[in-house]
Length: 172
Ligand SMILES: CC(C)(COP(=O)(O)OP(=O)(O)OC[C@H]1O[C@@H](n2cnc3c(N)ncnc32)[C@H](O)[C@@H]1OP(=O)(O)O)[C@@H](O)C(=O)NCCC(=O)NCCS
Image 1: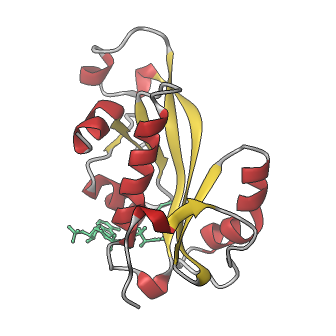
Image 2: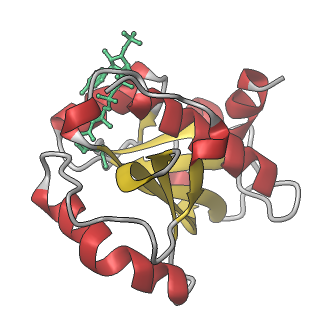
């Protein structure tokens, strides 16, 4: 299927979106979308966004955003030196991101990542966050995020971050 990758095709998850057939190859993420994402949205625990094509309710990709905090001490020393000594700092958590296998390798993962970064940047005008962080599920996911310049935390290498200043430059 040839994809039309425009921001208008990304929307907050709603009941009408068809999540049953979604398969990204990771059963935990599939189950999350099927069984948990709507509840997380309703309870404001996370904001799930889904990608669909016009006239088709099937979800082809999704990601979630929420607020989080990180201990400053886990950041690389170079970055730590530039920051106030608050102990903990606010960040935006890109908790999950996945693409249906039927459309993998067509740029949708990158498109959704950029969409999530743009949305996170827009949000900091209202509520500050000094970075976007991700929890990579495995080495493959970790290498996907590293491909886009995310850097690992010192103690938890499957947790990666991209400073908001760097994200702002992407959209400048
Ligand atoms: C990881 C995932 C989101 C990639 O989606 P995709 O649509 O197939 O990826 P794209 O086609 O957008 O790839 C964009 C770029 O990332 C690269 N890339 C894709 N997967 C990669 C990986 N695992 N490691 C390194 N680079 C990767 C591609 O080569 C491409 O690079 P290029 O533009 O320089 O050629 C998808 O495979 C997926 O949903 N996996 C299962 C769920 C998962 O692991 N999610 C992430 C953690 S929650």
